View 1 (cartoon, one colour):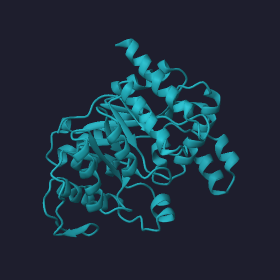
View 2 (spheres, rainbow, N blue to C red; view 1 turned 90 degrees about the horizontal axis):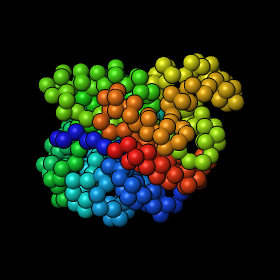
View 3 (cartoon, rainbow, N blue to C red; view 1 turned 135 degrees about the vertical axis):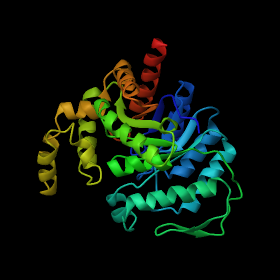
View 4 (cartoon, rainbow, N blue to C red; view 1 turned 180 degrees about the vertical axis):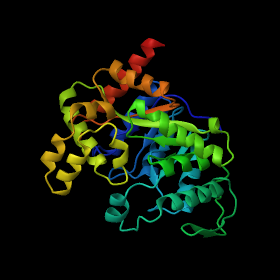
Length: 336
């Protein structure tokens, strides 16, 4: 499997924009030379519907999920979704999957967030079976399917696995084509990438054949100070997710104070604990050149596919993401 390289963008699916506005951003990214567009699935658009629109409305850009959770959908259903996309856009589809978080799985979907690593490993194996067009005969502890064969398979769809913590990073190296990392400053990628390589070697794979993708928050619009305050809230929000918190220990000096205030219900005090250096460590804000510099730093750290997550300065701001896409593309194009 070829390692994915280039520069990607993740659509800001929490903005509350219409599907048409997200589609406009995807088309803009293709027009400006981005290699990939990812669609997350949180509380905005349903991922396969959105990816289908993008696949039908673009010609070159790779498209993928960033991410599909392994709990709400079965591996068979997810495989059918990616096989359908690949039949329309062959060679352009990436299957991004991950365990998600207890909040999403348990509180939103009413499911048990049990054994995320073991479930994910079985899920990847089942997904590959479906994408390869083989009949399922799977009787795992968490993933079971017998006698299913996808009529639209086989398809060539790389599997990209979201990973943050050491065991999941090793699993990504062992079973995925691409490890998808996030919430990490550039100078902290080295040890995480090493864990991915270690997992690949332990599985008998060539570590260099596992690609590294990494997403980061980016804003290069005209409302930088408003965007900074919004990014500060994003950093706090994700740092307070128990499964994500370890990723913030190196960059958020006030993490423990923020956690205590958060658990006590004092959101204002928790937010005050997120200082500007923590925001700047996790986010690239300013000009297109500022965001392009973050892309360069990620590439020097060993990332093959940097992916800019492009929220607006405020909820519902579509101009901010569009400006970020245009200005970052212009900055990188001016260099090359």
